[in-house]
Amino acid sequence: MVSAMAGLPGHAVITEVGPRDGLQSEPVFVPTAQKIALIEALIAAGLRRFEVTSFVSPRAVPQMRDAAQVMAALRGRDGLHLTALVPNERGAEVAIAAGVDALVLFASASESHNLKNVNRSRAASLQGFADIARLARGTGVRLQGAIATAFGCPFEGDVDVQAVVDQAAACRDLGMDHITLGDTTGMATPALVVQRVEALRKVLGDAELALHFHNTRGVGLACVWAGLSMGVTHYESSIGGLGGCPFVPRATGNIATEDLVYLLHESGIGTGTDLDALIGAAQLAQRIVGHELPGQVMKAGPRLRTAGMDSVRTAHG
Amino acid sequence: MVSAMAGLPGHAVITEVGPRDGLQSEPVFVPTAQKIALIEALIAAGLRRFEVTSFVSPRAVPQMRDAAQVMAALRGRDGLHLTALVPNERGAEVAIAAGVDALVLFASASESHNLKNVNRSRAASLQGFADIARLARGTGVRLQGAIATAFGCPFEGDVDVQAVVDQAAACRDLGMDHITLGDTTGMATPALVVQRVEALRKVLGDAELALHFHNTRGVGLACVWAGLSMGVTHYESSIGGLGGCPFVPRATGNIATEDLVYLLHESGIGTGTDLDALIGAAQLAQRIVGHELPGQVMKAGPRLRTAGMDSVRTAHG
Image 1 (cartoon, helix red, strand yellow):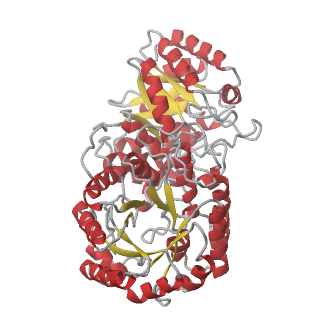
Image 2 (cartoon, each protein chain N blue to C red):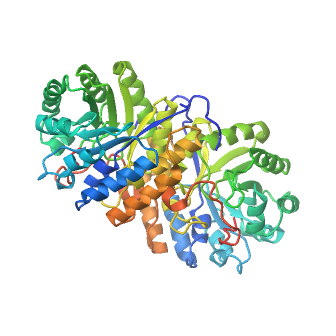
């Protein structure tokens, strides 16, 4: 490891999305106790911010039908920041009652993805945000905006940066102090990261920007590096890379938390987490879902876990 | 795709190492005709520079025992640049007779890896370079230096940047006009790339610098991005990510050529290659070796291959 490089932040913040984004992609319902055990392992590894669950229709998303129970096991603990996705006012009411710290309101930057994902227009989604914002006022619960397909749409292709900027501005105007750009189907590239972060800076004001990348085409951590070089300090990831790509059965989805932490620590950027403990949690996640996860550091081990000279075959070049 | 970014090169050069570095890692001998068919597919996709083979003992590396036949099928074609690894004067003689454009002379930046890999000290390897340089003089065949474990050693851990700089200077003094830093076991990080490239600039003179990364811990393309931002324009990769990591059975080795090209093209950096054709070649490589390769773009497809709205399930968030 080298010490922090000029131009890079000294510390980064991670929101772990495996319990929601990751486990929602699994075909089966992961028992509540196992979800909580996984989150406990992640807390023990030093993570503090979690996208815990979604308050959505249990018919539409049965994987998240235990949202209130998972929240009940975690709420009120010191130092944790717990968020949940809510698609509408009903979900927001239940989430607020369940004790979330912030509601995540999501819409896509592309019209066809929004229609496909939540069956309404982008304009209708933004109107829904306003209704939820009214409902949350005075409760102390914060609002976060998540912009899906912020780097490209699987149906429309490229997404105009202005659509992302306008949506971020609308979120800010509704009082959201945190905006996440979601790379929903792995279309982000480092160049697009630089372009979008530059454009967003002009409208974000005091709102915090977070980046959520997928590693579908292998450049997830290159996008993080581009974000870091732009001074962005908040990233979302999922332990072990939980959560596939809904569009390509064999493709990778979310960047793995432990791979992200590896990159950050090896760049001299602190995270407050322990890489070995995260690798252990990734292995727990793998056991819970019962199939191999795409995280790479969990397979290769940390960088300086040296080998015995007799333990390996030579490469001869 | 966005247009070329400020500070990035407009064009990059790729040396394809799959035929040598990749296939050498396979447990079985790939028939000569299949090797040549793979290289032909890569040429058709626009690649021009190949690390074709090694001229080594067929007992030590039986996978490369057809080195002369593979070279015979390729030599003399316009526009190709063909290199081969040679461990000693005997190998160099045969390689020169076989018609290579350049000999690749390799040694590790760490003593224990060099001992393990070629059974001699680093000093003895450098002395061997001098003997080969004398032998090659006047033949018109160029010399390239490859510095293995340039970002870390699996036995010793961190490798002092000064060892890399000194080895590069020794190579330059022997008349090598091309130096490759090899990330032999996937220990490179973007920060180390910046550090090493900065340090090397002072001693390279007119010699070209190439970077060879492994994706063992997921940061291979992030390292490329760091190299690009330092102005390095020459990268080595293997089609489909052929060639595992000799130290971790399930871990990834070389970055995949088509993933590298995806990153470059999406950054506005030309390569002279066709991504779709490279994906086809990666699929051919997969059929040849008979197991799944780690390349990711070959699974997910190019960025703008859009989906029909009925072909996918929704993510609902």
